[in-house]
Image (cartoon, rainbow, N blue to C red):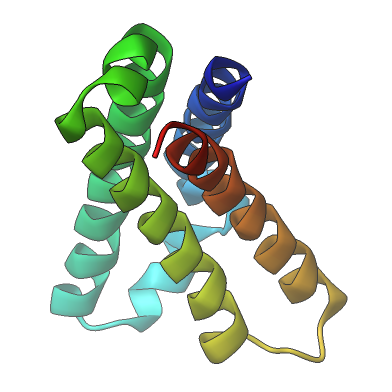
Length: 126
């Protein structure tokens, strides 16, 4: 059962990597980022590249190294850190985005699912 959660978590992270790879088009960054200073424009882009790469790493580790995540102390630490990453993203949604918007609540739920995909295996092997 823990392996199933991790495989699903791997696919979940790959999906978010793809989403972030298309941020330019999805969020009209060609126009929107011009409104920022050049420093802030660059920061948004670099942070997006880094978080996209983080999702690729999480996805790869989850899909290719499932047994190591579940069966080693380092793997269990990584599971908890991935849980905390998605939990922090869910909390950021609540704290920084419009809580009157149903889409914001949908994203909160989506990010909470990410946390659960890693928390369950972590708890199952603890």
